[in-house]
Image (cartoon, rainbow, N blue to C red):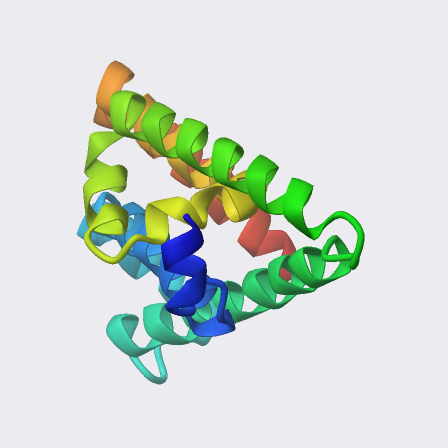
Length: 159
């Protein structure tokens, strides 16, 4: 963890990439007909599904990462830096290992760039997406589609 910090792992762009990696995995699991239905409601089909996905995922990732990096900066007081770094390293490793065991399809793409070490900072925000992917893995596509129906219904209320 200390080496990763030295090489800039805590920079905002790495938080964005961590979030985008998880959102891309989630998006890849959505059936095409559901994507068309959801995206047409959000963008009125002006730009198309691919561009819309990039814009929505990018904005969401940036918003989440800015909040997370502010959280890291706020916790970085002068006196507690050493303890914080040790605690962060321990939590990072524990969360990374847990992710590897429970969700390897998410862990390995994150691990390729050491983003698994950042995952613990954005885990609370990404957990609903990961949990939905677990539902798909354990209970199948029909149950996953029920989750997507709920998302679609919520979008109908917003749009």
